[in-house]
Amino acid sequence: SYELTQPPSVSVSPGQTASITCSGDRLGDKYICWYQQKSGQSPVLVIFQDRKRPSGIPERFSGSNSGNTATLTISGTQAVDEADYYCQAWDSSTVVFGGGTKLTVL
Amino acid sequence: EVQLVESGGGLVQPGGSLRLSCAASGFTFGSHVMTWVRQAPGKGLEWVASMSGRGGKPYYADSVKGRFTVSRDNSQNTLYLEMNTVRGEDMAVYYCAKDWQQLEAWGQGTLVTVSS
Image (cartoon, rainbow over all chains, first blue to last red; front, side, top):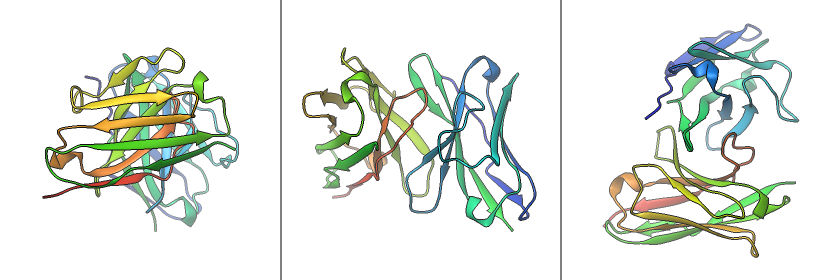
C-alpha cells in the first residue's frame, strides 16, 4: 500500500516561513492536498491539487509537489497557524494520509 | 453552505455493533463521493471508507474490510457506516467528509468508545 511520510514536528518563529514536507514514491505524479487541524477541531482543507487554495484560506499558505516530495509553505507564520498538518493523496481508489506534523510557533 | 452532521457514536462493547450517520446539506449529495475518516485519541487521520455517488460503489481500508459497511440514502442526503465486530482499535472520532480526492468539507465528528 502507498505510504506518505511527514516529520513529526516543525518549529517556526512568528513572521518566519514554515515548510512542512510530505514524501512518497513518485509523489509528484499524484495530486496532494493538505489539511490543518487545530486542537479539538475538525480538519480543514488548506491546499488541494498540489497548490490551489480553497476560498477563505489565507494567501500565506502555498504548496508544491515534485519528484518524491510535496511541501506546504506558510509565509509570515502567525500564532493562529499553530496546528497539526496532514498531507493526503489518492491512490488506487484509496485515500492515504501522512502521519501528521505538529507545527509549533515559538 | 456545506454542512455535515455526524451522529450515532457512543459506547460499544468489543465484538458489538454500531451504526453511524452523517446528514448532509448545502450541496447535491448524490453527485459526490462521500468518505469516512477516523482519528484515534492522540493519533493521526485514518481513511475508513468511501462510497461513490449515484452508483453506490463502496471502497474500504484493509483495517475495516469485512467488518464495516458504508451505505447511503441519496433521497435523505445521508451517509451511513455500519460497524460490526468492533475492536478496541476502532475507538476513535469518526468524521464524514465530502469527496475523496480532496476532502473539501468535514463534519464535527462522532466519538466511538470501545469498552466492556
